[in-house]
Image (cartoon, rainbow, N blue to C red; front, side, top):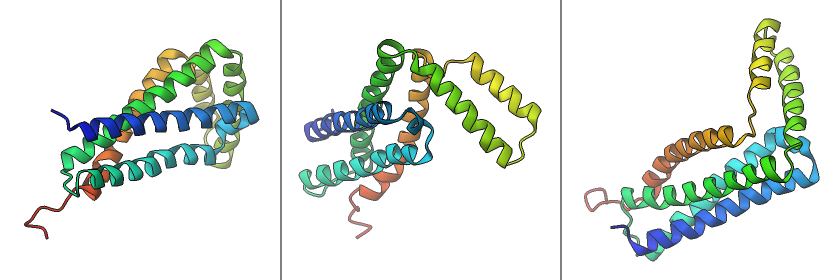
Amino acid sequence: MINEIIKRNGLTYGIITGVILSLITAAMYALDINLFIAWWTTLLSFSVFIIVPITLLSQTKKELNGVFSFKEAFTTYFIAAVIGVLISVTFKIVLFNFIDPSVKATLLDLTIKYLINTSEKFGVPASSLNETISKLRETDPYSIVEQLKGSIFTIFFCGILGLIMAAFFKSKSSSQE
């Protein structure tokens, strides 16, 4: 049975994470579509998966009077991460597939231009670049299926990050003190 504090905090911070990520997406959409391919916006979104969980795990450990096992720390983080990812992906699915599906074509063009510029800087062979662009055009990276596939990768990445954070935030056993 999961501790009520862990469930409550995981749910609360998961909602906070999802709302923050959705607001970042909405701001990029409203301000400038080019922000979707800017490296620093990816870094901003990634920082949400670092900053919010540090606060979450610190608060949960405090509420548990400093007794926080590795499993409890990981569970707390993972609940929040999954909820946050699901809220964020749901927002993106609705935005790109129902509210403004036309933005997908614009984003694809911007992505291809960025890919071409980056590939030229690194001397990627034209044949390889053309193959990548062809595959990119065949898929719709903002479709519901592709968004869900991306969320699985994100949850996996969060799982790894959660293991690291849980190791950091777990209580030391009496033999380690």
